[in-house]
Image (tube, rainbow, N blue to C red):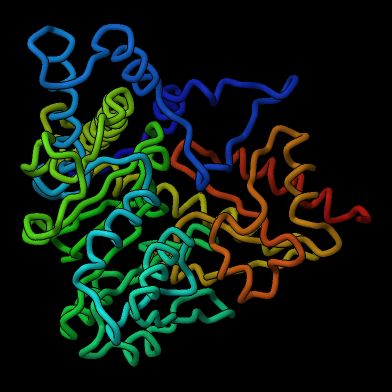
Length: 419
């Protein structure tokens, strides 16, 4: 079945895209720090607070409606990730969930055991594991190749051994956009008897996720990076979740999927997360031309269409960036390898600090990030941390070629000025 992508319809769903900087529309290339949200997410959060706001398991209407919101959130998240709803838990954000998981796994690790992390990752996929060094666990770090910002896979394989208990790897780099071959990493790790934790926060808005095909043991993402509210999601294989100790108050429900959700959850953000996934499903049905497609099928179709559309945008963006005088580009630039990158570009402009470039663009209503984006080891290893890090330009499926042209014109303008 053919896949169609209606950019005009997509943009009509996001109220923020109507905002203006004077006479010009504002341009959102800040998605890696948090995407914009469609109308239905706003309505979902507000609607819950206005009409269903209560704690769960009560004997009255709003509590029963809250029960349904929580149940539907687990079902929708399962359709997003390709797993059972018993295998998904919610929390404040990916960072908190990763620290919870490291705490839960800590009792299984001891002196001499090894955990592998990568220098390409966000610190939220390093710090939770490095803290286990206090228990005598050895932390091994895999470097990345500076010339294209890809993981040194040979080094990773050389570090795997009988003492390896966990490999923590990002699906995609939030700093430079590299997509790692997490399926291959998982196969290698499992052959060594290790489990795999995947940080999919940056990847989730750009491509389909199938945790069963990846055969990862754990995977985390954040709804505010895939067009939803501030909410974290963690997948874990049921066999692991059944065994791990849950640290929580005694009267709480100890059955999956609620077992690891401590305290009262953010029900309004759960409602917003459902709305974000329903948005993706509607996009997928429109792409398929099939109003009857199931939610999982529709979400996969949406993300396949998003990936194809964004690849076209990324080609135009990166070609244009490479033509800007004095611009330094970090990451994969070979178009034949763009299946190995997300549409996220990291650059510097000679003679201008990253903050000044971001400020200059912001004054023109073009929103980009500067700094290290908590991928501190990336900017450290590239020798850029002490001079302000990087300028990060993040495309999403609601961006357009015209917006990219506006950005490139602005960058060419600042490139021709003195610092």
